[in-house]
Amino acid sequence: MQKMPILWVLFLFLSFSAIAQADLEVKGNSPDLYVQHKVAAKETWFSVGRLYNLHPKEIAPFNNTDMNAGLKIGQVLKVPLVAANFSQDEKKASDEVLVPVYHRVAEGEWMFRVSVNHNKVALEKLEKWNGITRNQIRPGMELVVGFLKVKRDQSALASKAVQSTAAKEPPAQSTAPKAPVEAPKEEKQVTVVSAPKNNDKPAPAPVFKQEELPAAGASVNFNGGFFKSGFKNGAKSVSGQATIFRSTSGWKDGKYYALMDNVAVGTIVQVRHTGTNKTVYAKVLGQLSAIKENAGLTIRISNAAAAELDAGNSEARFMVEVKY
Picture 1: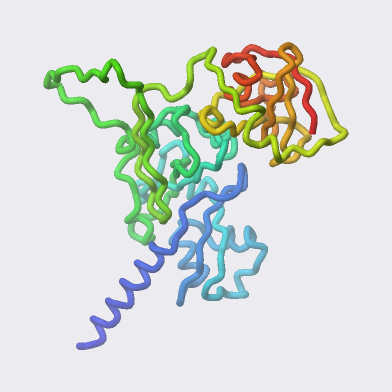
Picture 2 (picture 1 turned 90 degrees about the horizontal axis):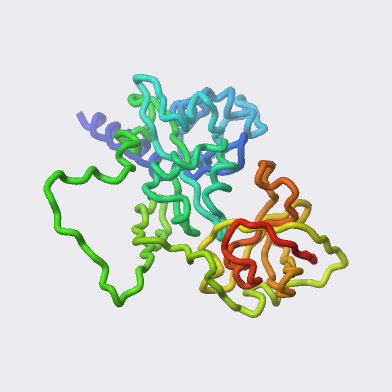
């Protein structure tokens, strides 16, 4: 009579342990996306496979290991996100549910880059799943970038499933008439962002009011920007066309960023507008993507950096000299 309660408690402990330790933050870049799993007591290749709806024969090679070797408590496995267990078209089998997986936004990262690194998922889907627009992305946000497909009756992760992706959309407006709400005329519109929480639960979608990007023609002056002191005079320089990417970074702190081919990520580059002879310093975030809009470009800089160069806040091209 006493064995049943003990077994039941043990079952609950293992189930909740699996849920609590499962990290649903997406790692890697397309096409090698994965989530990490820390092996708990009594777990096997097959129990991990059931948890993530993927046969162990696909998990073991992804970790450069052999299924016959067994698992060790505390071992961290990479569980690949593939067609069998990952959905970005919101399709699933009748016995499956969709569990959101997240990407934590890095400093200077914008939604287009998130899209490219996660199978080029449509920006419209990222906006819908997260209830924001592409210009409202902020460092520290946890963005839904797709869904883990798990068996409803076999995976403890099923308890994290969303009822439907429509749940991420703004609630429908009531048909009852409401009095219009106007902002005070003397007050500037502000952006309110919920602070990122340092836990495993997805942070609630931030609340934004009105536009948060400065209008075209806005200007800043941070004497070259925050990264000026980190610039190391190098022997390399290149001249060519530049344009902008839109970002909220830099307008208040002078942190300017850039995209440039054949330059290591993290490098501080000096960008001089040859027309105005003004100079800024920007940190390289990554390469220019191979899209038509980047053809012939030497560099893209954040729009705040372009504003300090007096190049405006539009996407018109201008000539620069870049040193690094």
